Image (cartoon, rainbow, N blue to C red; front, side, top):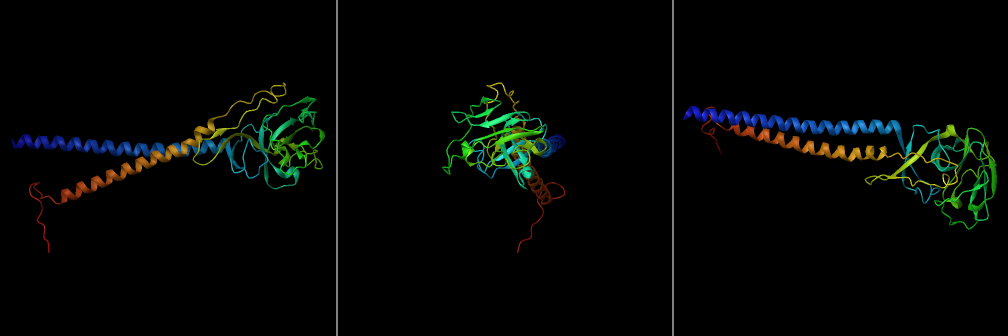
Length: 274
């Protein structure tokens, strides 16, 4: 009987040891996956995208002041009419970046306005459903008349809130007659993000594709998965941390209990109280 009991105790000990080893391995694996997911997503995101905090109301209601614009940094020179872009303001004698919508590219003639108040590109009226029409200053700035030919290597940009936007119309006294060089463009805005919310795509426009002046811009949703990798990796690391702490505490308690037993495994060690 003693031999059988000893064999059973040995099997139980081996099984317990195996279970603990598997638990430690799984917890460490979950932690490693969480860390790799965070590092990998961060590297890819920083290589392909930038976050631009929007602080002006120029692009309301498409992009609100206080939003974070997600900007592609790959292929940023290949912009077309209708794209929303971020660019440095050096062409307009500013040190800060701007966010505007491209309405005309090199070789175009852009003017304002037809009898319905629409801009015209190469003589074609553009129905822009994204434009905000209210005028906070009551000075009809949104209907400011202009007619400009866009130089090579440049684009003409306007804000979606026309009456509240300092854009190419206002800077026609600068070199390029208000147009900005494509080399100043940081990238194209593909999404909008606020912390701990689901990233949303920039609403597409068919204003220029409907009249044959542009081709649809391919959708880019990779940023959404990359941004969500952060809370997912944090969750995995949190679960793994708790798991590892529980395993460590369990191991410590088990060792303390073993230390209170006699070397023969029978009676507990004598306890001297006061």
